[in-house]
Amino acid sequence: MTGAHPYRERGADPVFLRIDGTPLHVRVEGQGPVCLLTGGLGSSWFDWDLVVPFLAPYRTVVRFDRPGYGLSAPEPADRPLPTAVGEARRIRAVLDALALPGPCTVAGHSLAAFHVEAFARLYPERTAGLVLLDGSVEPEPRPRPAPGLRDLAARAAAGAATAAAVPYLLGPAARRLAARATTVRREDLAPAPLVRRCYRTGRSLRALLRENTRYLDMAAELAGLRRTDPLPADLPVTVLAADDGLRGRRTEEWLTAQRELAALLGAEYRSTAPAGHLVMFDRPDAVASAVLDTAR
Image 1 (cartoon, helix red, strand yellow):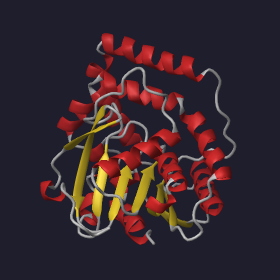
Image 2 (tube, rainbow, N blue to C red):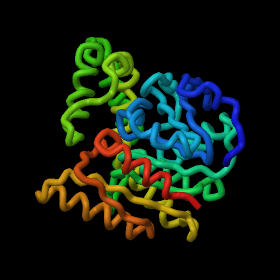
Image 3 (cartoon, rainbow, N blue to C red):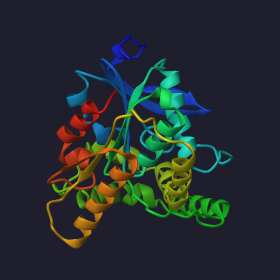
């Protein structure tokens, strides 16, 4: 889609859209065909900051924070549990609210690979390309029992931690440690003021715990979609795997799983090295190339 849209003039200024009653923080930059970037567990919009300059001259880049993350409001307690289908619908709703109804290349990192693949399966007419960036892989997932109780426990744990000021005291440090552990750079390149602003909150912890407890359920849900909702035969799909350059067993098993995922989806397989799981920090150029090269 190449036509003008009402947010382009605002560049990287934040936009807040009310989606299903929840205010979501959205950024729209660049020009040209549309691509949407969505991050993994615990990610915020600024984790894509190094990638956007590579894309913006050629693409209209959309990124948003899921409820509770970044600057987005938390979902009310009466909302349904996190699901892959629900996140696919949220992506569609964001694009609709931005008046971007044409085909879009969707790129998801880690857990969000489930979300964008579900989007491509449910809304093939809206999908120009599918990019899975070091995406989560579960070969034979099964949903876990008692989803409502698990979600209640996640909410309760987040509430207790917030009451004890744990996110305020430890949230930014935990975020930095996680980023350092998942990049070959061993540093968190995100701006420190934004990390403090977003990870000191109980809402980000609650969102993380809720999504984490639903991980295997979403994997099983996607496995079901793979049986009932095939990807279009002509849809370009790319699997980009992060190779940390270590030839240990863990690295080899992960790269094998990524190659198997690509074979399952009929996708082009790429690897980039050296790069950790937070591949957007270590190789933003490779991430952008995968997005730019994947479109029909």
